[in-house]
View (cartoon, rainbow, N blue to C red):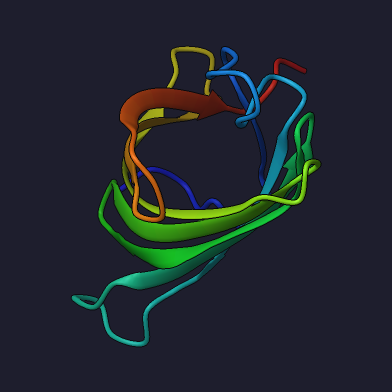
Length: 120
């Protein structure tokens, strides 16, 4: 399993569609280990920046797979929610990257994206 996500700040590697998460968005991740070795750990994050005023995600991690729900408030006052499954990848330089497949639940739309630790 890749290292803990606890305390990591991750940034999108590219902008999504207008009005969505973009390269100015910052995610601050937290991870709480499972009480038992075979159980899933708990993950959550707060995010903001660009068109997103505030967003939250919460879910679980089993090995290198995250499964979470997210909800966000945009600058125009719209709220939206969805589901995401991510794979934790360690980049050659040791940084963490999440390769994501997501789908809105509150409206139409789905896609893939990636967030990663910014270079030092």
